[in-house]
Length: 99
Image (cartoon, rainbow, N blue to C red; front, top):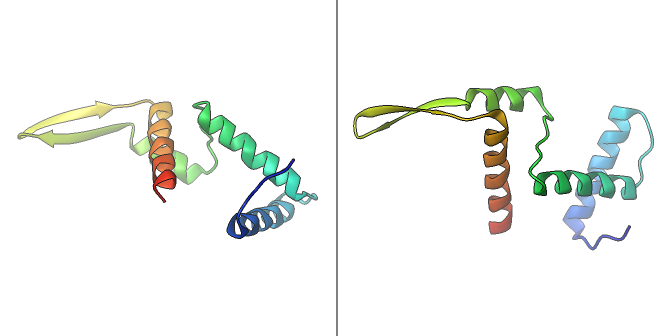
């Protein structure tokens, strides 16, 4: 696999590789990490979401039902977890594209 990346991205891959080696207690090459990141990106582009962190999943659960006030009237909005994850991922991608 060949990836054309910046020095900062290369450093990120190195750090992620070292973290995964420590966590999983097995060896990873830069190519392995590139495939891993590419797979995550494909999942995001295909509309799938990842539950990576229980704290994030808990935060998303809090956003399922929320109330807004509009012209003195309270409106309750209800979303599924998948809809909330999708909105957060979309906003994150928009933020990355604007940088």
